[in-house]
Length: 121
Image (cartoon, rainbow, N blue to C red; front, top):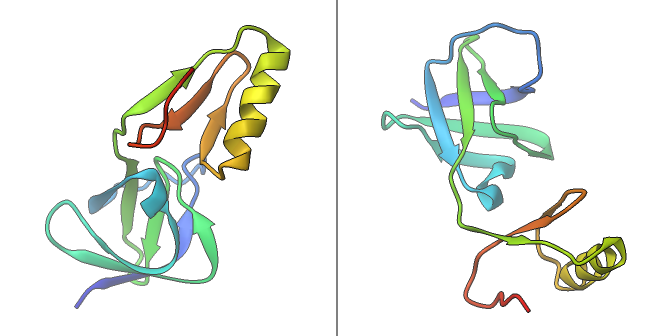
């Protein structure tokens, strides 16, 4: 029988728990509401939430039995987009947003997932 989790403990929580296993997920797999996740050691956990949640690296899935399972962000190939200046950063962010791409915007760069469509000019 799979584990079941309805509660997420954020990675910044003060709870010091030792997880029983881990799930390694790419960015797109970490947006969940109700989903069966495969753990590293061939067991499964059912996420069963009323509302969707974006899991972060280090979050803990709290099971109904009180055990925890750690969420690990999988390594993914990224493009690092570095702008010429702040105005260029805003223009790049607008264009990427117009394509509805998931991005990580920082002060001096933007990170995007590599894919067969993305080309950097």
